[in-house]
Length: 231
Image 1 (cartoon, rainbow, N blue to C red):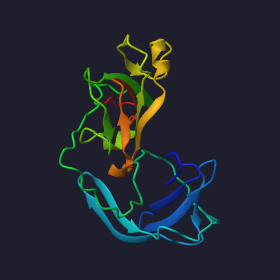
Image 2 (spheres, helix red, strand yellow; image 1 turned 180 degrees about the vertical axis):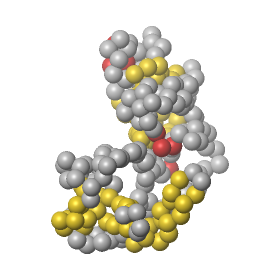
Image 3 (cartoon, rainbow, N blue to C red; image 1 turned 30 degrees about the vertical axis):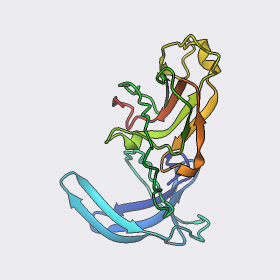
């Protein structure tokens, strides 16, 4: 576990073997990626299982630990590392789902079929025009709409409302960092909704929805730099 999915300055669970015996330990890495075992071993191994598609570990630890990541001198030497990142929501409050009024309507703001570039992080922006002559509504809840199987690559989503004076609507679906994107998108800066992995907005929020044009920005990360995925 680390702030940005890196192997440096991380809290680690390590499994290794000497050829005749396997070991499981609580470890940490410094800024150069050197791994040391923790003095205080907080992780408890529950199960280790070899399957056809890989090796599986089940373990647990207290959510809050008094360990200050002070390692001992038992450093581990690794000859080959294959890495990947999996974002996980570690703590979710036990909040019941709200009961919505019977006259609630839903509006999906969906990205077109986008091929995620082979880079670590992508910010993708696209224009979504709401129906003409839409009456005043109030947003009482918003949540993500993510294609099953793509949950691990969508980190956060933002929906911006454009200025009501902007009548000439540019069409755009591309990188938010593209210098060739329409300059009129600079008028779409009012944050209407923001979602991040594990986040929800309860129905008491009650935000007004008046204007007809929104820009949606999605932050994604390719699962590997060699793969391309469509979301």
